[in-house]
Amino acid sequence: MKKVVGTMLAVALSATALAGCSMDNTNGTAPGGDQANAAAGGNANIKGKITVVTNRTDLINDGTFDKYKQAFKKKYPGVQDVEFEGITNYESDIRVRLSANNVGDVLMLPSNISTQDLGKFFAPINDVADALGSLYFNDVKAYEGKIYGIVSGVSTEGIVYNKKAFEKAGITSIPKTLDEFYAACEKLKAAGIVPIYINNGAQWPMKQWGEVLAPFMSGKADYLNTMVNTDEPFKVDNEFGKGFTIVRTLKEKGYVEKDLHSNVWEASKGELASGKAGMYFLGNWVINQVIGAGAKSEDIGFFPLPYDNSGKLNAPLNYDYFYGVSVASKNQETAKAWIKFMVEEAGYVEASGYIPPQKSKEPGLAQLKEFKSYNPNFIENVATSSKWNDIGNTAKIDFFGGKYIQKVLEANDLKTELDALNKSWKEARASVK
Image (cartoon, rainbow, N blue to C red; front, side, top):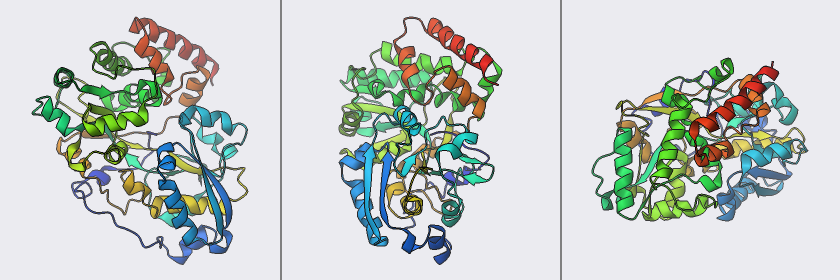
């Protein structure tokens, strides 16, 4: 999800990297050649069956993962099968299943596990990281020299928009201030277009307006970690309150989808693709999904969210979910080979519109070039501390899950809701050492 430790990413978004160059397609040979194959256990050890548990239900449903499986089995003839299990509400559901070791062989690491606890649930995969070469966020899911997760993709966050919808609404320039953003929403609404889908019913997208937005809005990469130093991190006039105020304003003015309680995530992509909706506030990873839902690539754009009226724009550099191997897996070599394959060969990175995890590869998404043309100041997020995770878990605040922000959206009074959050945080902070 959305943090990074000590890894410089500015090069990833240089003019060259974002120039929409074609991807450097590999021929299946990893850096290090035979050495890389050996690091994955050797072809003879890559066999049998594995189960992959994923948040990407869409790629299971549309057959994309089956294509990856066939290519993987062709590369490793000893593999009998790769089974996929999709979880829609992944972040919260996988935590429950981890406690019962019911997570298959390969899974995406949930965001709230303390680094020192990673070894309880996941097997070290340093050999895979070494075989893939220089990677972004290599230390984020690591502890005492052991790497437990490899990032599936790198992204930034902003406004994904339909250019045809903007044209129909008479929007002739990209909003660069919050007032201009609201004005664009008003024009879209007047044209009969849903200005912005927040996907409240899906729950997880609501994280955008809190712990995703607050750090880069503040300009402080370690903003979330500073929360451990106060009993009242949620205030109307700080970054959390400002982000919450924006999304509450969007709701109050009728700029969001009418049905806020049904999970219409998959349907919303078609709405944006067709121009019935104007915008998302999400990462660049969603752009190819919108194109896959029927939009022409040239009709989809991407610009930084103008969260205030200063005219200055910050944007984050984030990681998405990390691949991991369950410590309970009985086929870890094949599981590790699957991760290496997904990062390097499957085409998942390119199809998802990510900045590639491997630093030697350049991103191929044209919309990133547009995004950078608005000259945002990129803020590299840092990994949240174990104490931050522990306090949040003890307080039962589902950071990166979205449920608590759903309550913020529905609250009659913002300050009252924030006071309740602060009360839970304060009590938890006092108990966590």
